[in-house]
Amino acid sequence: MNMPITRREAIRRTALGAAGLYLANSLPIRSWAATPAYKTTGKAKSVIQIWLWGGPSHLDTFDPKPDTGNDYAGPLKAIETNVSGIRISELMPLLAKQAKKYSIIRSMTHSNNGHETAAYMVQTGRKAGERDIYPCTGAVVSLFKGYDAGYKELIPPYIVLTEPQGRFPEQGFLAARYKPFATGGDPSAQRFLVEGIVAQGITEQQQKDRRDLLQKLDTMQHTIPDNAAMKVLAKSQDDAYDMILGDGAKIFDLSTEKTALRDNYGRTKFGQSCLMARRLVEKGVPYITINNGGWDTHKDNFPAMRRKLPELDKGLATLIDDLSQRGLLDSTLICCYGEFGRTPKIDWGSPWNGGRGHYGKVFSVFLAGGGFKGGQIVGSSDAKGENVKDRPVYPQDLIGSMYTLLGIDTNASLPHPLGVEARVLPGASDAIGTAGLLKEIMLS
Image: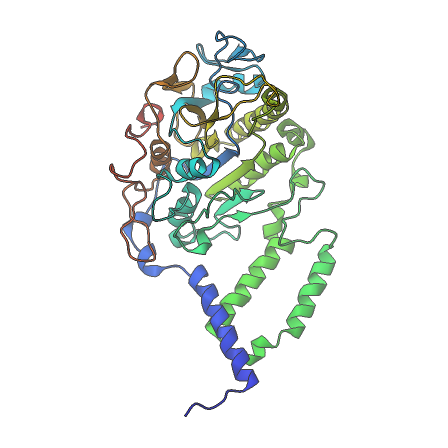
């Protein structure tokens, strides 16, 4: 015969259940973490992914075609860089002076024109529409180089500045703890507040007072004394407050940076996000995404480029120079790209007024540091930028090259919740295309 439980017992059981759910997401999976795949060493220690949400035009950025006429090239000109034979958009003069430090892929392809499906393919290296949702590159790096691999920093190992990318669950079939921490907020504000942790208009003293009050009101610690799960939850709470009021919060305080350097990055959300990314690299965060939108230019493409490209130029060029001067570029892999390119032929008619559509047949990717050579071009598009001319590069080629430079075994297994065999990179039968790693620009 089942005896009724008291209200206190009901509370105790509920708390233990909640703690158990927390523990499932927070404690290392010992059997998985002990596998040889976690012994990761490589040239790169961190990745800064600059995600150009919406897909930038390759012809207007890193693969200009100035001789194709107004219907393709439009009004923008190409300029020479400090590497003979490499030209980029006139709106990126600072990057033109740094071409010796980066390489450009001009033959990236997957032939998908949908935002969601193309983003999934580029972020995971997998075909869209299959049974499983695979984790994106950042989640895989978080798995192999995060807490399970001995990462001990308070700052999460996978950070997004500032809004989530949102096209699919970034952690895929992995546990929720591999999902990125999106900061929210605006790093260019006078005081950058991490949304969801710090409330606007609340002082540090008010935060401390609220914490003290909550601790006084917390009867759960008396209901379940000396419980391991509750100790883990208490530790998590302490860490969260440290992110607000302690050492963890200092990493997000850009006021300690020199005014001239902040100006060089650009006093924009993107520019200051680049500066924040450098600080996170210094802290040892393995994967940082800067989610930069505004590249879906169906209408008025060229006014948008005149706004977006100088901002990109300023932030990205300063990031490369800043990392280089601090001796961090060789161990920090910077990649800049979107889910696809834009249609080479411009639609001048109303209401598009010089717009470009989605285009997955061929587009460009920018790579610097972390074991990639500088001053190189990989592949090419044809005369009008409509098709790959030579050396196609598929998403899994780029991702596999990044994993290799990070020291992650591209044939390693992923922990599937149903025990299904899953690998870091797809096999030949599941691949989007077959080309191979970017060995021509990877340092040996």
